[in-house]
Length: 169
Image (cartoon, rainbow, N blue to C red; front, side, top):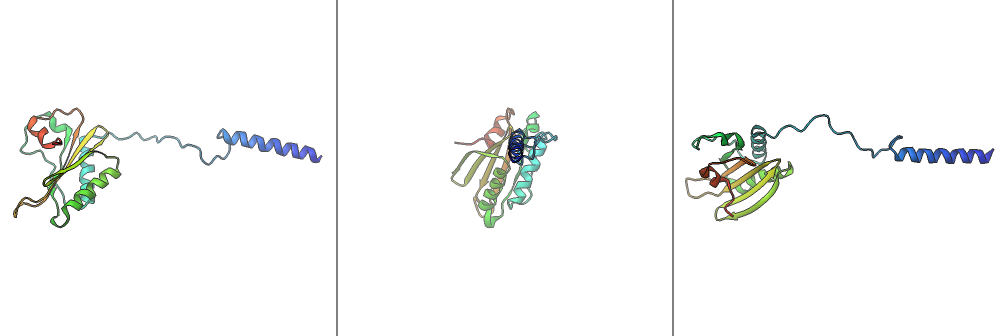
C-alpha cells in the first residue's frame, strides 16, 4: 500500500510539472494577451501635443505652434512646429530637460552637436523627425530661444523651410 501511494504521488507530481510547463496550471510567468486597444495614429496633432507637453514639463514656457509667415502649401499638414523663448536663467537646462523627456517617451537621438551659439538635437519616432534647437542669446535685446519642429517622413518641404529644419552637419 505504501508503494502504491508513492507511485501515485510521483505520477501526480509529474503530471503537474508537465501541465504547468504547458501553461495549464498556475504558471506565474505566463505571457499576457496583447492589449485590445490599437496604438493610436501618430498624427501631426498628436505629435504637436506631445512636443508642447514635454516642453512645458522640461521647464519651457508655452510656445508658438503656428506656421505664420511661411510659404503656403500642403506641407503644413505634415509639420508640427513649436518655438518659444527659453528662461534666461537656465535656457540650456530647460532645453536638455525637454530632450530628456522626449527620449524617455521613445524619441530616439539621431544626431547631436553644437555649432557656435546653437545646440542641435535630431530625434526620431514612428515616422517623424524632430529637429530640436537651442539658440543662445545673441545680444542685449535677444534672449535664448528653443525650436522643436517635427516633420513627418516623406514630407515635401519648400526649400526655404527645409533649410531651417535640417541639420547643417
